Length: 581
Image 1: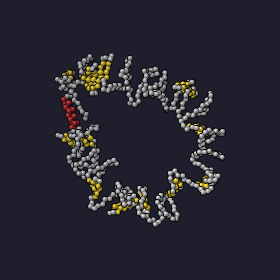
Image 2: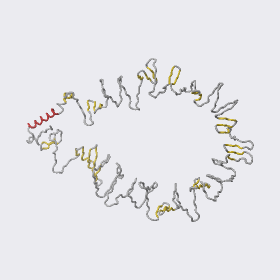
Image 3: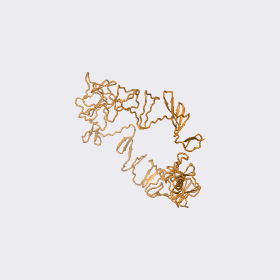
């Protein structure tokens, strides 16, 4: 049933209100609705300071509206969250039995013991840390500082990796004074600091003896080798007496000459290495013969009459006589070179000038290449011309109808069109302080970082002038005054917002008389000159001075119809306006 309102009439005893019986019937119906169908008196009972649910085994649900919670004393319950409304600590002074999980986003501090009969899982991320201050015991193992011991008398401590994993001493067994390994890995004995072990730097593997630090192994007593001695490295000795055949695998030094691998070198500084033949014999090196005496002394021949090839540069100090044909890739000469035939080789060098058979002319230094025709002759380039690098023209440069002379680019016929590729820009970049000048500039679209002009207008009759910004950008006026002769009209389809920051909005007529619209703590004040005339707080208006009404009437239809009990307030008693005292 909807609420029933008693009609009290327009004025006292005017006979237009509800009769008494009708009025009290409405009152009874309202109370019946309140105590019968509403939660109070039916589902919920309030007795003293206790609120209880009337239905058997029914929950008593207290819920806030929206994001609000239920506050009991200083305990706030919002959804499934329990917090303190005054930011103090929540204390639970009795035993707490929780059948589900407990999730704490902050610290849990316990001054007594914590007993857990199930599993305890600590951390859920690789960056989580579990710290124990004091002694940590796990079954029969105790960790105290940097010491790990067992709690069982005479018990062993085993460290074993999982699966194929291991620990630092996995598979290594210490038993009395024996150290054994169950795998094929080396057992490394390394002393600390300057200390040493019995084996020191000697490495024994099978029947091989070696040095781990690549140093020499010294045998300071007599050495008897009953078998064969093989030396793959260098053998240095003071006196050696041997019989039979000797095979040297490494290096052999014999009085200033060293034989090693396939090389023969002189070991004394600035010594020559002389290889000579006896009598008229020749010195042969891998099929090449060098004659050492007779009329053919110095001749170099091959055993199979093939050509002798020099793989590196050959410098000839004296005269070079060639009776046959010279075939070469590069020829460097000192003096004049005369070519009577065609030049078909790779590169021809004249001083610093290089002329390649493929048409390339270059220099070895930073010098210029001058092409200087005689008299009135010209340099004609008949094919396509490519210039890589900086091209400099001293004088006038004509390209078809385009002329470049000094700092002036002009045309000998027709207009000049600068057309960059599609999607690219035409950039005019004067130096610092310079400007781009033109009597008139026409374009479909122009972008300027800074636009300086005395007049900004449209080029089409009756066309609109649109000034806008990108995104949330503003139009910023850096001048203090905008002048207009005549009326100024703003035609808006939405709001007009004037944000003066912390300042006021002045309304002036001739520059001297003014009114002010002012913001005072979110309320509107209208001032005449500097004097506040009206103060508006929400829907309330307060006149600071006298209030005069020039109209024929003042409506008091919305005045309260009973005495508010506040001195000076107006209220309406029927058709009479009264002032509360």
